[in-house]
Length: 139
Image (cartoon, rainbow, N blue to C red; front, side):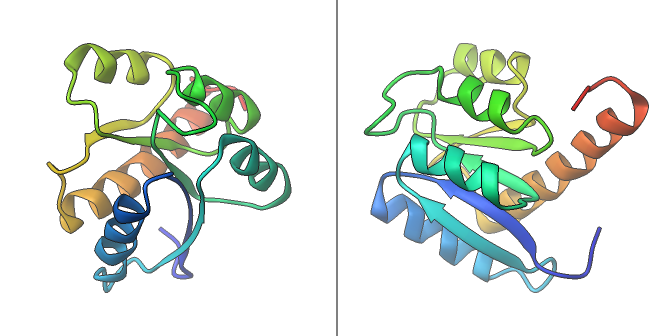
């Protein structure tokens, strides 16, 4: 894992949830995180087009994209960036679906702590890198 801060794009439209994610990631002594945040899918897609990110933390249901296809739009735009879904939906079927559609992990808001979130992001980056290196994921 690199020593510079991990660049994470947080796509979250709830200010309270976004603040909580910022707080959880700021507690991490290592790795450090540089978090960019947007509340809208279109802004996230623009940011992914123009800036490098190590990972995306994605809420599936946004004000401007209240559907599950949000993940597919992010993944189609930036298959080179691992996605961790952070959702308020505590639904195993949705969790399995997002993993099938390319997300590296599915976490439920309110059931995740700082250590779990940091671990999920780091594991997602590592797993994604292994998939690309092994040829199982074409980017």
